[in-house]
Image 1 (spheres, rainbow, N blue to C red):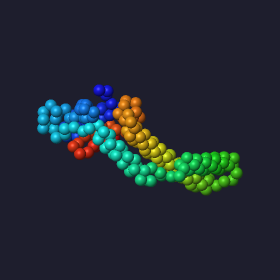
Image 2: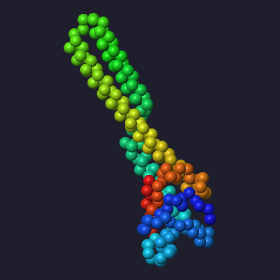
Image 3: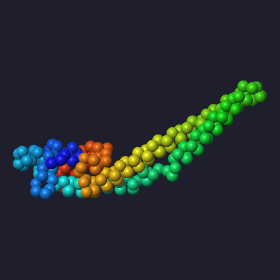
Length: 193
């Protein structure tokens, strides 16, 4: 029978060996090779493919719900791009002001050197503070974007798994980006991602 995209991810949760695909009648099963070689040497006998797919879909849908239910992870702000641009404009204006103050001093316009140094230090602190806030927003924007990408990818994989050809090589987009291994136990799957 044809190797499906899911074959390479299935491992026995008891002994850790890669599970083997077997067809019995109209159904595809995945069996622990250790159990089939030496009866009772492993506690896991087999799982039917449709049961694996259904459990996998439930697990991935649960991951989506968890990610979407945490606004501190999924939706950290209305529009980071706009906020980042505002901070950059503020930084640009302060840097221009710093240059004008310094140029005025260099032109000899009677500015007190100590006051100038104090003003420049305050301005430099404000510039650095704004740069730090902007950098934090850039980081949060990137993190939020990564979480949204993961949610979208999980949803694509779930939809593909729910489809009629859910184990064909081309029907599951980027499954390896969502799953490293699936440990199959007697009554549950443990997804390593």
